[in-house]
Amino acid sequence: MTPQIIRKAVFPAAGLGTRFLPATKAMPKEMLCLVDKPLIQYGVEEAVAAGCNEIIIITGRGKSTMEDHFDGSPELEANLAAKNKTALLEIARSVSKLARVTYTRQAEPLGLGHAVLMAKEIVGDEPFAVLLPDDIVDATVPCMKQMVEAFYETQSSILASEVIEGAAISAYGVLDCVPHPKNPRLLDVKNMVEKPKFEDAPSKNAIIGRYILTPRIFEMIETITPGAGGELQLTDAIKALLKYEKVYGFHYEGKRHDAGDKLGFLKATVEFALKRDDLGPPFRDWLKSFPM
Ligand code: G1P
Image (cartoon, rainbow, N blue to C red; front, top):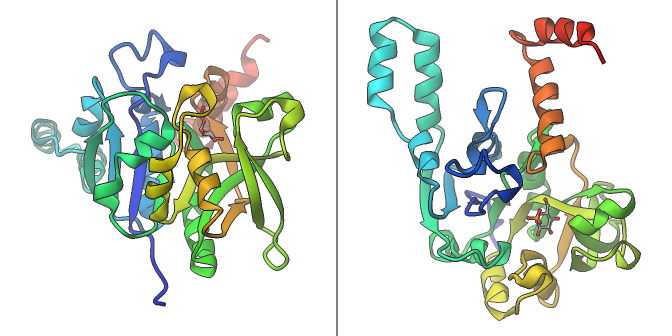
Protein backbone atom coordinates (compact mmCIF):
# COMPACT_ATOMS: atom_id res chain seq x y z
CA MET A 1 0.00 0.00 0.00
CA THR A 2 1.31 3.50 -0.85
CA PRO A 3 2.14 5.35 2.37
CA GLN A 4 -0.42 8.07 3.07
CA ILE A 5 0.39 11.68 3.85
CA ILE A 6 -1.41 14.26 5.99
CA ARG A 7 -2.64 17.21 3.94
CA LYS A 8 -5.70 18.36 5.84
CA ALA A 9 -6.10 19.76 9.35
CA VAL A 10 -9.41 20.16 11.15
CA PHE A 11 -9.91 22.80 13.86
CA PRO A 12 -13.04 22.39 15.99
CA ALA A 13 -13.87 25.99 16.88
CA ALA A 14 -17.61 26.15 17.43
CA GLY A 15 -17.57 26.16 21.25
CA LEU A 16 -19.20 28.96 23.22
CA GLY A 17 -16.09 29.82 25.24
CA THR A 18 -18.05 30.33 28.45
CA ARG A 19 -14.89 30.02 30.59
CA PHE A 20 -13.74 33.39 29.24
CA LEU A 21 -16.92 35.42 29.65
CA PRO A 22 -17.40 38.34 29.30
CA ALA A 23 -14.48 38.47 26.79
CA THR A 24 -16.14 35.82 24.64
CA LYS A 25 -19.66 37.26 24.67
CA ALA A 26 -19.27 38.71 21.17
CA MET A 27 -15.82 37.41 20.22
CA PRO A 28 -14.77 33.81 19.51
CA LYS A 29 -12.43 32.44 22.18
CA GLU A 30 -10.17 31.22 19.35
CA MET A 31 -9.49 34.90 18.58
CA LEU A 32 -8.14 35.62 22.08
CA CYS A 33 -4.51 36.65 21.68
CA LEU A 34 -1.32 35.43 23.27
CA VAL A 35 0.64 38.71 23.08
CA ASP A 36 -0.49 39.75 19.58
CA LYS A 37 -1.50 36.56 17.79
CA PRO A 38 -4.88 34.79 18.05
CA LEU A 39 -4.93 31.24 19.45
CA ILE A 40 -6.30 29.87 16.18
CA GLN A 41 -3.38 31.32 14.21
CA TYR A 42 -0.85 29.52 16.43
CA GLY A 43 -2.63 26.26 15.59
CA VAL A 44 -2.92 26.99 11.86
CA GLU A 45 0.79 27.89 11.66
CA GLU A 46 1.63 24.60 13.41
CA ALA A 47 -0.50 22.61 10.95
CA VAL A 48 1.08 24.40 7.97
CA ALA A 49 4.56 23.69 9.37
CA ALA A 50 3.54 20.01 9.50
CA GLY A 51 2.75 20.06 5.78
CA CYS A 52 -1.04 20.56 5.93
CA ASN A 53 -2.04 22.97 3.18
CA GLU A 54 -5.77 22.63 3.63
CA ILE A 55 -7.25 23.97 6.85
CA ILE A 56 -10.83 23.16 7.80
CA ILE A 57 -12.32 25.24 10.61
CA ILE A 58 -15.55 24.04 12.23
CA THR A 59 -17.35 27.20 13.24
CA GLY A 60 -20.69 28.24 14.63
CA ARG A 61 -22.75 31.37 15.19
CA GLY A 62 -20.83 34.54 16.07
CA LYS A 63 -17.50 33.23 14.79
CA SER A 64 -17.15 35.27 11.59
CA THR A 65 -14.14 37.30 12.79
CA MET A 66 -12.09 34.11 12.34
CA GLU A 67 -13.02 34.09 8.64
CA ASP A 68 -12.09 37.78 8.35
CA HIS A 69 -8.79 37.06 10.07
CA PHE A 70 -7.62 34.53 7.48
CA ASP A 71 -9.03 36.57 4.56
CA GLY A 72 -7.28 39.37 2.62
CA SER A 73 -7.69 42.88 4.07
CA PRO A 74 -7.45 45.29 1.08
CA GLU A 75 -8.22 48.50 3.01
CA LEU A 76 -5.73 47.78 5.78
CA GLU A 77 -3.10 46.68 3.25
CA ALA A 78 -3.61 49.79 1.08
CA ASN A 79 -3.34 52.00 4.15
CA LEU A 80 -0.09 50.33 5.32
CA ALA A 81 1.36 50.42 1.78
CA ALA A 82 0.57 54.15 1.40
CA LYS A 83 2.39 54.83 4.67
CA ASN A 84 5.35 52.63 3.67
CA LYS A 85 4.87 50.41 6.73
CA THR A 86 6.32 47.40 4.95
CA ALA A 87 6.95 45.18 7.99
CA LEU A 88 3.35 45.55 9.19
CA LEU A 89 2.08 45.10 5.62
CA GLU A 90 3.96 41.79 5.44
CA ILE A 91 2.42 40.65 8.75
CA ALA A 92 -1.10 41.51 7.57
CA ARG A 93 -0.61 39.86 4.17
CA SER A 94 1.07 36.70 5.40
CA VAL A 95 -1.94 35.68 7.52
CA SER A 96 -4.21 35.44 4.48
CA LYS A 97 -1.54 33.54 2.54
CA LEU A 98 -0.91 30.87 5.20
CA ALA A 99 -3.07 28.14 3.67
CA ARG A 100 -6.35 27.41 1.95
CA VAL A 101 -8.91 27.74 4.72
CA THR A 102 -12.44 26.39 4.42
CA TYR A 103 -15.22 26.70 6.97
CA THR A 104 -18.09 24.47 7.84
CA ARG A 105 -20.63 24.90 10.59
CA GLN A 106 -21.61 22.84 13.58
CA ALA A 107 -25.22 23.94 14.07
CA GLU A 108 -25.63 22.39 17.52
CA PRO A 109 -23.07 21.96 20.33
CA LEU A 110 -23.27 18.15 20.45
CA GLY A 111 -19.65 17.49 21.40
CA LEU A 112 -16.11 17.22 20.01
CA GLY A 113 -16.85 13.99 18.11
CA HIS A 114 -19.82 15.65 16.42
CA ALA A 115 -17.69 18.71 15.56
CA VAL A 116 -15.10 16.51 13.83
CA LEU A 117 -17.89 14.67 11.96
CA MET A 118 -18.83 18.00 10.33
CA ALA A 119 -15.55 17.74 8.33
CA LYS A 120 -16.39 14.30 6.88
CA GLU A 121 -17.19 15.41 3.31
CA ILE A 122 -14.31 17.89 3.09
CA VAL A 123 -11.75 15.43 4.45
CA GLY A 124 -12.94 12.47 2.39
CA ASP A 125 -11.10 9.16 2.44
CA GLU A 126 -7.67 10.17 3.77
CA PRO A 127 -5.95 10.44 7.17
CA PHE A 128 -6.08 13.94 8.65
CA ALA A 129 -4.94 16.06 11.58
CA VAL A 130 -7.13 17.53 14.32
CA LEU A 131 -5.89 20.45 16.42
CA LEU A 132 -7.82 21.90 19.35
CA PRO A 133 -7.05 25.64 19.34
CA ASP A 134 -7.10 25.89 23.18
CA ASP A 135 -4.03 23.69 23.45
CA ILE A 136 -0.94 25.65 22.47
CA VAL A 137 2.25 23.63 22.19
CA ASP A 138 5.52 25.51 22.34
CA ALA A 139 8.15 23.26 20.73
CA THR A 140 11.35 23.49 18.68
CA VAL A 141 9.86 21.11 16.11
CA PRO A 142 6.12 21.91 15.94
CA CYS A 143 4.10 19.21 17.74
CA MET A 144 2.02 18.25 14.69
CA LYS A 145 5.17 17.97 12.57
CA GLN A 146 6.59 15.50 15.12
CA MET A 147 3.32 13.55 14.91
CA VAL A 148 3.26 13.55 11.11
CA GLU A 149 6.80 12.14 11.14
CA ALA A 150 5.67 9.39 13.55
CA PHE A 151 2.66 8.72 11.29
CA TYR A 152 4.98 7.98 8.37
CA GLU A 153 6.28 5.08 10.49
CA THR A 154 2.99 3.81 11.89
CA GLN A 155 0.39 4.70 9.21
CA SER A 156 -2.08 4.54 12.12
CA SER A 157 -3.98 7.04 14.24
CA ILE A 158 -1.80 8.93 16.75
CA LEU A 159 -2.94 10.92 19.79
CA ALA A 160 -0.62 13.42 21.47
CA SER A 161 -0.28 12.61 25.14
CA GLU A 162 1.07 14.27 28.25
CA VAL A 163 1.59 12.86 31.74
CA ILE A 164 -0.80 14.62 34.12
CA GLU A 165 -0.29 14.17 37.85
CA GLY A 166 -3.09 13.95 40.41
CA ALA A 167 -6.79 14.72 40.22
CA ALA A 168 -6.40 17.05 37.22
CA ILE A 169 -6.38 13.91 35.02
CA SER A 170 -10.18 13.79 35.22
CA ALA A 171 -10.40 16.81 32.88
CA TYR A 172 -8.97 14.75 30.00
CA GLY A 173 -9.37 11.70 27.85
CA VAL A 174 -7.04 9.11 29.41
CA LEU A 175 -5.14 6.27 27.72
CA ASP A 176 -4.86 2.70 28.89
CA CYS A 177 -1.53 1.90 27.25
CA VAL A 178 1.90 0.28 27.38
CA PRO A 179 5.22 1.65 26.09
CA HIS A 180 6.01 0.84 22.46
CA PRO A 181 8.84 -1.73 22.31
CA LYS A 182 10.93 0.21 19.76
CA ASN A 183 10.00 3.90 19.73
CA PRO A 184 10.25 5.51 23.21
CA ARG A 185 7.89 8.33 22.22
CA LEU A 186 5.07 6.00 21.19
CA LEU A 187 2.52 4.26 23.41
CA ASP A 188 0.57 1.17 22.37
CA VAL A 189 -3.02 2.07 23.19
CA LYS A 190 -5.27 -0.71 24.51
CA ASN A 191 -8.26 1.37 25.61
CA MET A 192 -9.23 4.89 26.63
CA VAL A 193 -11.80 6.74 28.69
CA GLU A 194 -13.09 10.32 28.52
CA LYS A 195 -12.90 12.35 31.75
CA PRO A 196 -12.66 9.46 34.25
CA LYS A 197 -12.83 9.98 38.00
CA PHE A 198 -9.30 10.23 39.41
CA GLU A 199 -9.58 6.79 41.02
CA ASP A 200 -10.78 5.21 37.76
CA ALA A 201 -8.13 6.72 35.45
CA PRO A 202 -6.31 3.85 33.68
CA SER A 203 -2.99 5.78 33.61
CA LYS A 204 -1.49 9.26 33.89
CA ASN A 205 -1.31 9.56 30.08
CA ALA A 206 -3.82 12.23 29.12
CA ILE A 207 -4.85 12.92 25.54
CA ILE A 208 -4.08 16.49 24.55
CA GLY A 209 -5.52 18.44 21.65
CA ARG A 210 -3.49 17.07 18.73
CA TYR A 211 -4.65 14.02 16.80
CA ILE A 212 -3.89 12.25 13.55
CA LEU A 213 -6.88 10.13 12.62
CA THR A 214 -7.66 7.66 9.87
CA PRO A 215 -10.88 8.32 7.90
CA ARG A 216 -12.65 5.34 9.49
CA ILE A 217 -13.10 7.63 12.51
CA PHE A 218 -16.12 9.23 10.78
CA GLU A 219 -17.91 5.86 10.64
CA MET A 220 -17.08 5.36 14.32
CA ILE A 221 -18.46 8.78 15.30
CA GLU A 222 -21.67 7.86 13.52
CA THR A 223 -22.03 4.73 15.66
CA ILE A 224 -21.33 6.11 19.16
CA THR A 225 -23.93 7.38 21.60
CA PRO A 226 -23.57 10.42 23.90
CA GLY A 227 -20.91 9.87 26.57
CA ALA A 228 -19.32 12.13 29.21
CA GLY A 229 -21.31 15.35 29.65
CA GLY A 230 -24.06 13.95 27.39
CA GLU A 231 -21.92 14.77 24.33
CA LEU A 232 -20.65 12.76 21.36
CA GLN A 233 -17.06 12.34 22.48
CA LEU A 234 -14.14 11.97 20.07
CA THR A 235 -12.45 9.74 22.67
CA ASP A 236 -15.37 7.26 22.50
CA ALA A 237 -15.11 7.16 18.70
CA ILE A 238 -11.34 6.50 18.83
CA LYS A 239 -11.99 3.76 21.39
CA ALA A 240 -14.42 2.20 18.88
CA LEU A 241 -11.71 2.53 16.20
CA LEU A 242 -9.44 0.31 18.32
CA LYS A 243 -11.59 -2.70 17.35
CA TYR A 244 -10.42 -2.29 13.75
CA GLU A 245 -7.06 -0.52 13.77
CA LYS A 246 -4.02 0.20 15.89
CA VAL A 247 -3.94 3.53 17.71
CA TYR A 248 -0.82 5.07 19.25
CA GLY A 249 -0.24 7.63 21.97
CA PHE A 250 2.64 10.02 21.38
CA HIS A 251 4.81 11.80 23.94
CA TYR A 252 5.81 14.88 21.98
CA GLU A 253 8.79 17.10 22.76
CA GLY A 254 7.61 20.55 23.88
CA LYS A 255 5.52 22.37 26.43
CA ARG A 256 1.75 22.56 26.29
CA HIS A 257 -0.23 25.51 27.58
CA ASP A 258 -3.91 25.14 28.37
CA ALA A 259 -4.96 28.48 26.92
CA GLY A 260 -8.62 27.53 27.40
CA ASP A 261 -8.15 28.12 31.12
CA LYS A 262 -7.64 31.62 32.56
CA LEU A 263 -4.57 30.75 34.63
CA GLY A 264 -3.08 28.70 31.77
CA PHE A 265 -3.75 31.59 29.39
CA LEU A 266 -1.97 34.07 31.70
CA LYS A 267 1.05 31.78 32.09
CA ALA A 268 1.28 31.30 28.32
CA THR A 269 1.03 35.06 27.76
CA VAL A 270 3.92 35.72 30.16
CA GLU A 271 6.11 32.95 28.69
CA PHE A 272 5.48 33.99 25.09
CA ALA A 273 6.12 37.67 25.90
CA LEU A 274 9.38 36.82 27.69
CA LYS A 275 10.59 34.89 24.63
CA ARG A 276 10.08 37.83 22.27
CA ASP A 277 13.14 39.79 21.15
CA ASP A 278 11.25 43.08 21.17
CA LEU A 279 9.23 42.67 24.38
CA GLY A 280 11.23 40.13 26.40
CA PRO A 281 14.00 42.33 27.87
CA PRO A 282 11.80 45.29 28.99
CA PHE A 283 9.05 42.92 30.19
CA ARG A 284 11.56 40.91 32.24
CA ASP A 285 12.92 44.13 33.82
CA TRP A 286 9.40 45.25 34.65
CA LEU A 287 8.51 41.85 36.16
CA LYS A 288 11.63 41.94 38.34
CA SER A 289 10.65 45.31 39.75
CA PHE A 290 7.01 44.32 40.21
CA PRO A 291 6.05 44.31 43.92
CA MET A 292 4.95 40.75 44.79
C1 G1P B 1 -11.08 17.56 24.91
C2 G1P B 1 -11.14 16.04 24.72
C3 G1P B 1 -10.27 15.34 25.77
C4 G1P B 1 -8.87 15.88 25.71
C5 G1P B 1 -8.86 17.41 25.85
C6 G1P B 1 -7.46 17.97 25.59
O1 G1P B 1 -11.71 17.87 26.13
O2 G1P B 1 -12.49 15.62 24.83
O3 G1P B 1 -10.26 13.96 25.53
O4 G1P B 1 -8.11 15.29 26.74
O5 G1P B 1 -9.74 18.02 24.89
O6 G1P B 1 -7.41 19.34 25.79
P1 G1P B 1 -12.18 19.37 26.50
O7 G1P B 1 -10.96 20.11 26.97
O8 G1P B 1 -12.75 19.96 25.25
O9 G1P B 1 -13.19 19.22 27.60
